[in-house]
Image 1 (cartoon, rainbow, N blue to C red):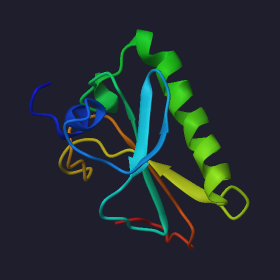
Image 2: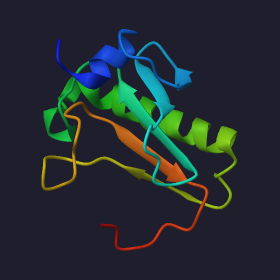
Image 3: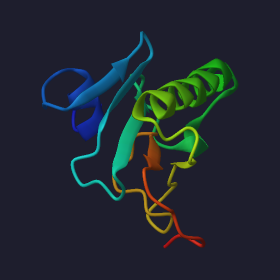
Length: 114
């Protein structure tokens, strides 16, 4: 995916404020945070959205949730609570068409969102 913003970040072509990295995942601080903690967690493998997941991606999804938990603990939001969000499609609010989790916390998050 030559034109994908997140693929370029993973490739080091665009700088980011890295939080964590594993063999399959990359996490970085959002450049336009919506909460005091706003980390994006992305697979290094290009997957357009959750609709693009396949059976072989089951372990990857588990890794994404486990990494989100680890980062929440590191950022100190595990006790107060946090939100993990993935947007799908334009009407769902997806702006970058590469699967990603938004890890949000550090303040009370209203419901319903958006």
